[in-house]
Amino acid sequence: MKKLPFTKEMIEKIIEKYPTPFHIYDEKGIKENAKKLIKAFSIFPYFKEYFAVKANPNPQLIKILKEIGFGADCSSMTELIIAEKCGITGENIMFTSNDTPAEEFIKAKELGAIVNLDDISHIDFYEKYCGVPELICFRYNPGPLREGNAIIGKPEEAKYGLTKKQIFEAYKIMRDKGVKRFGLHTMIASNELNPDYFIETGRMLFELLVEINKELGIKFEFVNLGGGLGIPYKPDQKELDIFYIAKGIKEHYDNYIQKNNLGPVKIFLESGRFITGPYGYLVTKAIHYKNTYKNYIGVDACMAHLMRPAIYGAYHHITVMGKENEPLTKKYDVVGSLCENNDKFAIDRNLPEINVGDILVIHDTGAHGYAMGFNYNGKLRCKELLLKEDGSVELIRRAETVEDYLSTVWF
Ligand SMILES: *Cc1c(COP(=O)(O)O)cnc(C)c1O
Image (cartoon, rainbow, N blue to C red):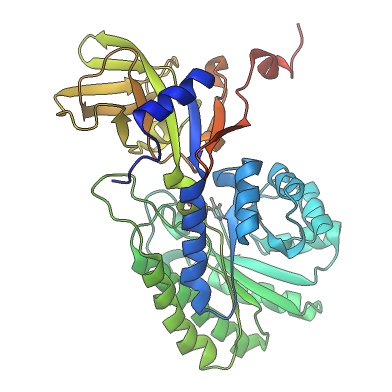
């Protein structure tokens, strides 16, 4: 298990200034990890990571990643505007949307973003509002040609992308419209921990690129392998070896792209979880103990701050600060205060004995954590803190207030 970037004494000091609950992000961890990804993929002629804004839309984090050389992967109007306000524009934005409203395509075009179309019918839709683009990308869905994975499901059940037949048709249409610049995209897994899955995705895309080139004579500028790199949420899971993945993909690159003289093709990723996921922590306090048919620890955070356990039954490791080395003699459900029985951060979890007032740290909340939160039950989203490289702590998003919540209605 990863070591926490703070001690009990440090977090107590932080809580004095910023009361629980909050997410806190480890700047050093995020930066080192982002640089590691770039290093692993530096074996390609050109590599760029477009951070999936969906995973963690906090501008301060996006700006840190921008400094390291990342672009932004956006899929909504708000995400496009966040990228723009962070100073990310032009082809440093990849717009990978689906069921897209016209105004979002218009905004993406205005920003000069790379547009990744999710369906063949979007060709006419896009042209109607934005004209023929200079550069186009399509999202490929291999359907039954690939095995699925737990979160995204089987490709043929997923709503995303074009079928193999459609993808040939789509590039032909664009070629005939005079488009000169092309990219190819797929995203078929989520939170996948099998490194060979990504290597196979690379192979699949390179093979398809060669086939399309043979049939239509078009040259590709980039291949975007999507996101979906998993992280070890459970203590017994292993971190993905990103160097192994990059090397494996490079072998296929050489075999398909180099051998057929189709290079250089830029390699893009749009990872979210892998970049920030392990470097965020939801810090909360035990405020109640309840013993009925089960043992419950009630904390001051709830599923408004972290939805993954409630939605997917996802495991998030929990550390009770100061009791790291105590035996796990108790079995608890760790719960929030929503009037929803699935508002539980852990079910039947073996933990050390917890007292009211103890600080609980819920791990791996740096991606799809705060971002997924909602306001059901009038619950307000918590603040976000940045633990900076120099050890200081900065508030990077204040907590929502009742006034925020009520600002869209009147009495
Ligand atoms: C959600 C999403 C991502 C990021 O997924 P991670 O699992 O966080 O890597 C990337 N691209 C698209 C199109 C997505 O929908």
